Image 1 (cartoon, helix red, strand yellow):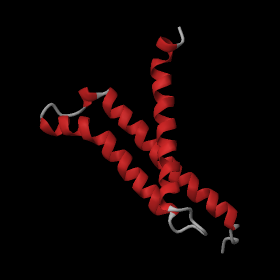
Image 2 (cartoon, rainbow, N blue to C red):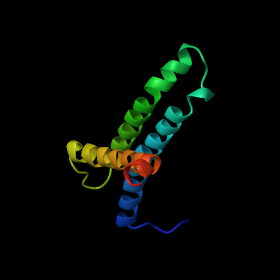
Image 3 (cartoon, one colour):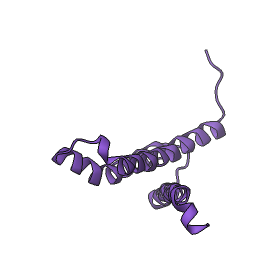
Image 4 (cartoon, rainbow, N blue to C red):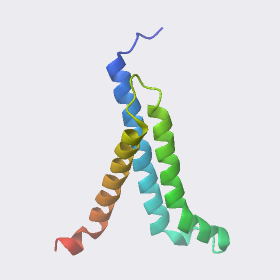
Length: 106
């Protein structure tokens, strides 16, 4: 039987998992936007290209909110939402700087 984990480690693990979801959603959405030639040519491909990044991000933030709701003394909903949105925003800015950094900083 494994040893009991500390509450601090469980809390940190929960928040790291919750923060990893929007990061993965932003990066996956960027991949879908970068490589539309890999999608089908018909209407499903267009729908996936246009809607998938936003839907992935919404699902990831919703899952992150659900994960952090059951921690010991969870922050209010608005604070948890703001934290996860800031993680998604920081990831989006980092990916855009990586892609267009040569234009901004020649």
